[in-house]
Amino acid sequence: MQVKEFHFPLEVDWLAGRKVVTRVSGKHEVEVMPPPVFKGTEPSVWSPEDFFVAAAASCLAVTLTGFAEREGLVLRRLHVSADGVAGMRDDDRFGFRRIELRLSITTDPGQEALALEFAEKAEEACLVTASLDLPVSLEVEVATADLPSRDDPAAYAESI
Image 1 (spheres, rainbow, N blue to C red):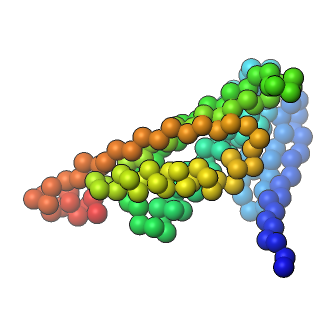
Image 2 (image 1 turned 90 degrees about the vertical axis):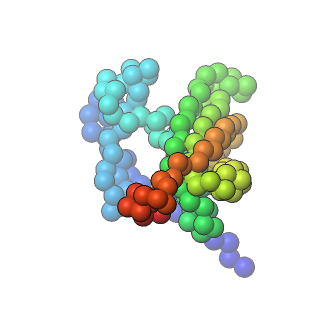
C-alpha cells in the first residue's frame, strides 16, 4: 500500500541586500526580508516570521471553511488573529516558543454549537499546526448574526 504524499515546491532567489523573492509556480511572487526587529529595512515587506505565523492562522481558517462548506455551517464572518511568540526556548535556542490563535466566528442563530465543534475539528486537522513542535493555543468566540426581519423582504432576501 502506497502512502499519499503531497509536495509544495517553491523557489527563493536573492534580490539585493537582505531581500529575497519567493516563487511558487502559477502564483504571484512575494518579496521577503527580515522584520525590522531583526534589522530589516522595509517594514512593509513580509518576513519569514510573518509567513510562519500566517501559515498557522490561515490554515486554521481554511480548514474551518472546508468543514463549514461540507457540513452546512453558515459562516457570516470568520476572523483569526494570531501572535507568534519568539524567545529563548528550553533547548537554549532562539526561536518560536508558541503561537496564540484567536478565532471569531459569526454564524446564524442555532448554529453556535456546530461552529464550536468545527473550530475544534479545524484545530486538530490543520496540517500546519499539526506539523509544529511548539504549543499552539486557540481561543474561540462564536456570535450570531442579527438577521433582518422577514417583514423586510428585500433585506431578508439579501441575508439568505
